[in-house]
Length: 265
Image 1: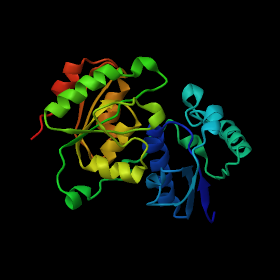
Image 2: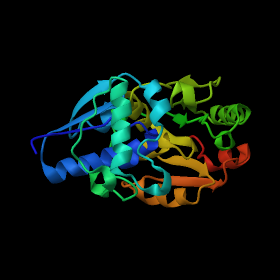
Image 3: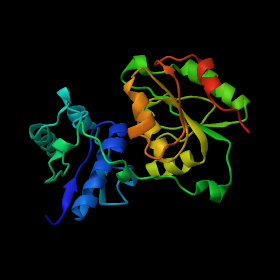
Image 4: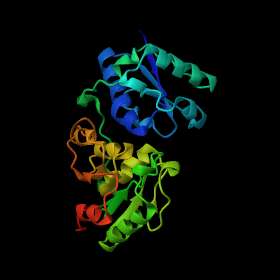
């Protein structure tokens, strides 16, 4: 085997961050052959440390056909699942080659040593900032979304405490809020820089929360999924970044979230 091509990953950003990219990193270390990874534009930070990266435009048409292609029904990925994904992706002009047996990707764990730390030296270069980031998710599961009016109340409280509030995430999957510095849609390199200068990130359980912990940025989060407790304390958090769950719910009160946020120093 002279080289390996893998990707692109078409599922959720959280699974790409916590399962797919660390698994590929682990395989490259184990096999010690050149890796080529195809990924969506702006996500190369997840792979640059171990692979030659080939970025392609965001594939909305492919996503509609292959949403969560690596998160199969029944919890087990088959070769047929992957072959169907490759055929669909190729039909949209996406080159997708890999000799790897991807049945090992899901639902098995990934060695924590193969996670990458994305902490930067932005603080040292630009000085300490009194920034707080929020991920005001607007997901397809509406019951998991905190309403805009709740976010605005929290933003007011954080601003009163002396924080500058940064909004992060994808434009199409987050609320458009007033009273924030809008960094939504930036690439992962820039996101890592901004997060590394924030005191903490606030929001529901999501991919950006997992990414923040890899940037060693404390997170204040909430979720109704009990499995997330183990993820935030373990598999998603290999560097033991500080994390605090507001409560087991998708709908905490503004006061509960605000009281979980440290005061500005």
